[in-house]
Structure formats: structure tokens, C-alpha cells
Length: 112
Image (cartoon, rainbow, N blue to C red; front, side, top):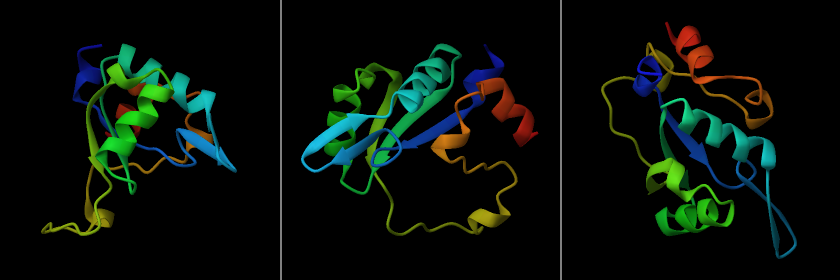
């Protein structure tokens, strides 16, 4: 678990954590359970959304996982960095449909 504390994970809201059907918002339980699992394994989790930080917090609370996140953030619109994300040595983009059987240790192995 100590090794997994080095894993930092950002989780999106719409169509990752929740799905909308008209005015109804439905938690995507596979992602919700994955967040719980990563949290239990010691990963540091952040929830973000283009809808803003408060929307991200409310969505996580609706899913019953607000306590799993270290912070809630708006999704960035501009990133100022000396490297393009494609050049980051330790970066994974994971689609929510492909994360169900992954563990924090799996992600760390893939990043190594």
C-alpha cells in the first residue's frame, strides 16, 4: 500500500463517474467501485470536471465517494508546462470502461 501512495489519479465526472439520462444522473457503479478500491489501496485521488469544482464535489457526494478525494477541481482549459503531455514519462490516460480490473499496483507497473 505504501507504494500506491505515490499514485496520483484524476477522475472526471460526466460519462466517467455519472451518466445523464434527461434530467436524471446515474452513477456509473463500475467507476465508483474503482475509485473506492484505489482509495483503499492508498492512491491520492482528485475529482475534476469542466462543470467546476463544486459540481465535481456534489457529483462525488451523490455517488457516496466524496471522502475518497483529496480535492475537487475544475478541469483545466489551459495548461502551462515546459513539456507536452505526450512527453510526460509517467502518464496514463485510462478510459473508464478499461479500468474495472485495474489496481493501483497495476497502474504503477504500467508507469514504471
